[in-house]
Image 1 (cartoon, helix red, strand yellow):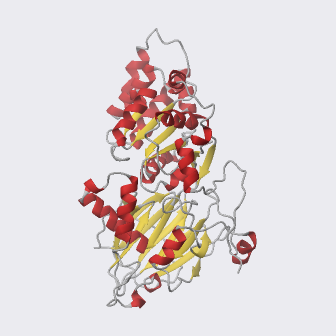
Image 2 (cartoon, helix red, strand yellow):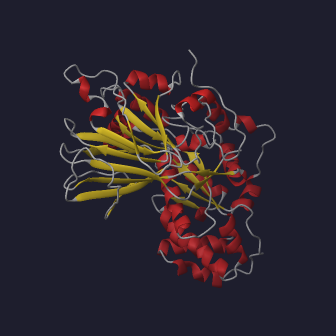
Length: 486
């Protein structure tokens, strides 16, 4: 029987191809570019560092939360400044709690290579503060005739040292620039410090960082300044739930006053007189079901026993072990098999590409987790959608998947054994649809809670047997900018 998967070739710089874990490791260690790739520390610092008066002005504006907070540094600019404009200015956001014991060491090394004022610990400086005050300070003085401030603002790039959640946080804050027409928006490179690092893998930055190689830090900074810029779709999520229900939302999901849904669709349950609304953005994936339940339990275990989280490898071992205890592989005999599938609680509607009408699609009976995927990488570098043959794409009415095509790939995972075979890429996941918009209606019945996650941030979603919960996913009208490692 012919497999629906095959390798594909893509030469476009904006198209992101899934890479093997071994190739990620080799590239992350710098082995592929080791020969003839020696980077002079002082030359690198000269290209990346801003003049001192700019660094101090930007930092003071952030600390004071005032665009005018750094004005004194412009007025008292030292006569020693020779007018040199930084060739490739960079700022770094680092989650010093990520990467196990390596986070603080990496932070110190980055400050030595660039400058202390250009490396922001996320415990001290939030990304939105950098956008609203730091960049605004450069914009203000650039408009007032300071050529160095103007060129620095135009050429600045951002490096994020952290996991996928940290990268998404920074991208979301940079999205404010799109909304307010404050161009250009700085592109983002990644130093992977998280557990899965799927966003990092998708743009060639690898699944882990080789801390033992000091030269790798210099190489990463160099490639962040020279790598081509790619576009990344981002997806807006709106959640409406019956009033009175309480959730502990993840960092990426914020409460909002109201939300609007298409009222023309037939609904299965009722709508409560009072509703609670939340909204957020994801870049890699949204999922509902057993995979989110495992992630939720793992996150709580790690928060309760932080001494267990000593690094990515330890986290993966604990995660795998924890998944075996959650009933994905062996469901207790006392449970009713009919309650295990998402079909019992879920209705899915989609809009296909260039189509304004909603279409209901069936939820496969055997599926226990449904994922809407934007990138090729999921679950630490796996590609569950697969590399599909042209004839299979045509038969199913699909198109080749890309991170900037305005479509989400929707697939299902069955029991744990099926998911395991998908994760080692022996088989593809169960293909359900491709969609430009998705709407979910969830109603409990025998279920009290569902589990959901966005880009690895899970939460427990309470459900009512009488009233429906709605979740809608639509593409954000602007795209984020990522730096693809050369």
